[in-house]
Length: 302
Ligand code: ATP
Image (cartoon, rainbow, N blue to C red):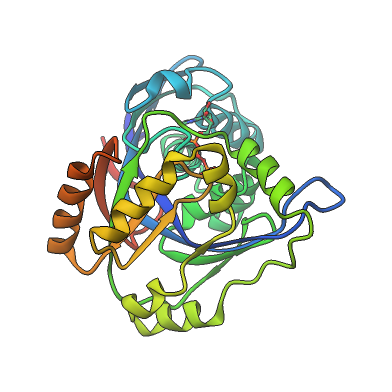
């Protein structure tokens, strides 16, 4: 195959339908059991050849994501090159739509996208299992950003099991104009729940997802980081209330927040919900998305 000049990858945001968190372990980590769902809100990652590693970023919160080694996509390109025994000669250009520090795994999406894009640009053909192992080295949510769909995450969230999943979930996300730091939310969790039990996702949720019963699933959505996130950002209470009053099937903080996720009955209801949330004055901005969708994937090769 001729050497590709340019690879374009789409990488999805995620929402946790359930995020159960255990007490801090001896290694300083929180065990989790979580149900991830990838949704059709995407960052784009374009990889082209360069003499050195270069990164540029535009769009939603681009200035916060950074253009250097602090950007997870940069680290992903470096790690894959090291793994393959080559130099990381690539220009990565990221178009951000996933809110930065929004609890929707935007950085993880970009890292997953960079792994997939560089693997294709450098024609490495890295086996899927190796890509997932590299992803886990970069961050707990990154294997899921590669895998997509609906999956159960255990351990630090990186031990994935694909779930039987039917049905389409229509979401409205309420975005904040300022992010929340994931470590700060976990620190607050330690204060509120120092003796949290072993995390376990409700079997009823898993059964409802397998049956494609979206309404039944919504009754079992949970997020152990919701209370600590609200303690750090009291205004989230009003945001969640506005969604419930507007008739959302479920209202919860997404991951570590501050994005709030509202489940709608169908696509039309999602539009109504978004309008009502916006009118409530309790929400900065809304975006609609549905899931599950596939993980980071190549959309064009030039
Ligand atoms: P999670 O849901 O995985 O906890 P998040 O969605 O809350 O993550 P991110 O958008 O991934 O948060 O960003 C968290 C921090 O990571 C940001 O404050 C930013 O400095 C840093 N970061 C590094 N790379 C990126 C990237 N490509 N996009 C966004 N943030 C990035």
